[in-house]
Image 1: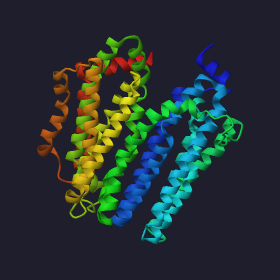
Image 2 (image 1 turned 90 degrees about the vertical axis):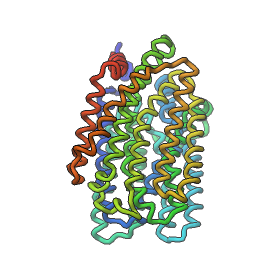
Image 3 (image 1 turned 30 degrees about the horizontal axis):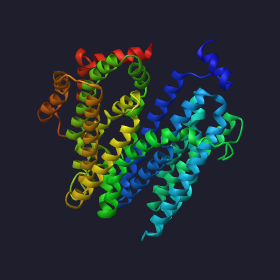
Image 4 (image 1 turned 60 degrees about the vertical axis):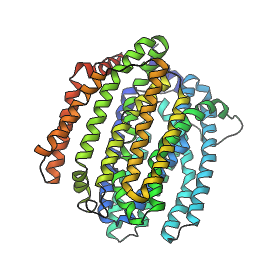
Length: 489
């Protein structure tokens, strides 16, 4: 009996991992494209203060889903895969947990609404609080994951996103109030989650409801207290600076900060999607062949550092061109310049490309508790740096704080690995991995056109060539090629 037959016996329907991965990647790319179009349009037509508030609300919505998840979807997927009889009680217990979290979040947003001076912003936070109950439906995602039925949730996400884009353009020409776009994005998420619930009823064959009668939360508690809490603190890193800017600086400063950050928020999940296939092989090696695990891990690190350096360098050098192409001259010149902020976020995203590999390595070694310590420490660094530098340096200090926190997190994490399992990385390999990024930096002043669109096009071409060159260095990419081949097997 093959795996497909086992799936049919367990869940009554066939599934294809490759098909599901294709749907997930395609849906994420389409959602990213639609989100980018909406961001660029609103960034051009709204005032800096209004666009900044819109960006704040979208960021808070994303963080609400991170808090409500606590890594529980992955944990529940694992548990149901091991025992199908637990599907209904686990899903309903997870919904119960989401109800409790939604109530807490709703109370927070109701309180924030009560202290708002602007009537429009008060209404937005009240609607945000009311919409929290919809996040309960997100607890049903494991049912689709286990059955490899990703098309349904993909449609549930993409249709509201496309509708949001169309309505945004229409309502702009009807002179819609600026805070109305924040209400529209809340309605988008509410609609998507409500649709997901009704679609899950057809998939499961019953109507799942929060249930205390067969509580499975104690089974989930160990994972929620480690991986889940770490996920929340990692997610908080991207919101701390935003909240500081909102609370401490003029409302208009939210505009350039949001213009820079909004370009990276949809991309945050991409490194984790790319790193996910590494975990099974790393886990097997950590259990059965620790010397092989250390050798393979050591060989992967230079390649990741090289990619990180290419992304960071390209973003730093072409920040102005990116902003000019997307938003025109609006966020190029002071006092609303986002160029420096964009550069710091580029460096932060470059570091973020390494983070999922570090997380996968700790999980493979069964050292999830250290991830919690690292994530809490990073948040402390972020908060302290924001508190010290934002009053004097402005919005760029918030992006600098994020970059500093991620840098210290990575240095601390790899130091722990070096000390705990004796991991060693060749200095020569790291130096060699940095050569393509150094080449980008050295050639930019001499070869880059002055006009924004040609400059950005040139920068993207050079970055692709640099990644290709890095991939062709056997001593750098060999470990990645070997691991990818083992995963395929």
